[in-house]
Amino acid sequence: MNEINTRLEQREREGRPIVVGLVGAGQMGSEIVSQVGEMRGMEIGVVVDLTPERAKQGFAHSRKKPDVVVADTLADAERARAAGACVATTDYRIATRLSGVDAVIDATGSVRMAATVAMDAIDHKKHIVMMSVEADVTVGPILQRLAENAGVVYSLAAGDEPAAICELYRFADALGFEVVCAGKGKNNPLNIYSTPDTEAEKAEQRKMNPRMLCEFVDGSKTAIEMAAVSNATGLVIDKRGMHGAKSTVPELNSVFVPAADGGVLSRSGVVDFAIGVHPGVFVVVRTDNPHIQAGMKDRDMGPGPYYTLYRPFHLCSVEVPLTVAQAVFYGESSGHPGGKLVTECIAVAKRDIAEGET
Figure 1 (spheres, rainbow, N blue to C red):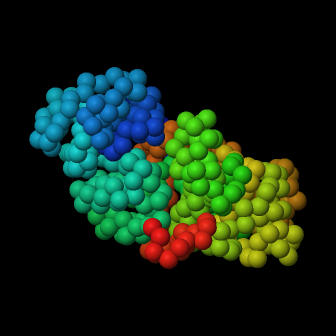
Figure 2 (cartoon, rainbow, N blue to C red):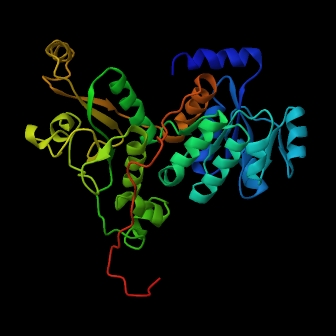
Figure 3 (cartoon, helix red, strand yellow):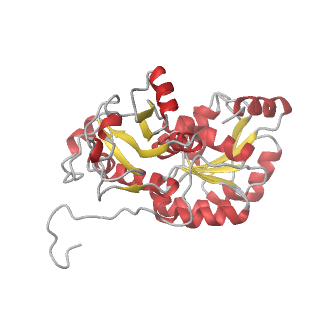
């Protein structure tokens, strides 16, 4: 993140902003447009959605209020951009193939579409920022390999919990700490038997899709996010489903440590989640160096040997533009899987299913 602000300011002064193609103008996508509208040195050049009206409406959230042209073809989009306008379209290939676009953000919410957008962006030498963690835990290593071979960046999105955890992990790992546990907070009470039907009333009150709320309550979303962290860091799960222990922030470095030292873990080097520290993310680290332990104690980090590095927020789509800048300026990601999956997510039936039932 070094000097991203000054580099963006320089781009603004030079009149050559980073140009972003955004696929998906829903809640997350519209927030990205809004945030980029506050920034120097970056602009949304094209927005893609299911209808031209929705795509065009995506630009309404930007304080910059650009001229917007609806384009059905790449040639039309190129002419619009040459004339200084931004583009609204229903064709994702315009975002992934338009000359001048530096990076593409997928905010479609669809695993299949996210993978399709990512592959086409990579094929056309565009950096790709994925808001679909579900796609990442399914085909992320393949997309990462394709991006590496193409000389572009494939990245998880800053602001989402996996990337926020990776940020803390990289900090700790670079300093030589032993990473004992990397994790996130969960705010919903865990109920693995939750269904969209059981969450319907709460979902209506919160103006949410019942299925989406169910994914948070039953732990599916958490499992997917922590699988992404595992695949990006090489840390493993301690047991299927993880522990999900209750904890406050001060208790993290006594709960998420090996059982031999009073915690819940059977080993070091794992991912997990805590009930009670949402919306933050954390890394529990260890050092047996007496001199460093003394310094950590002086800085109110506790007596050791376990210490908590805690980030008390993750701002979702608000932070995503920083990943774009990181990819363009430094050729680096906010987190990406290695060469293979370390951890996978599986589906488990919540009730008895009859033979042949669909």
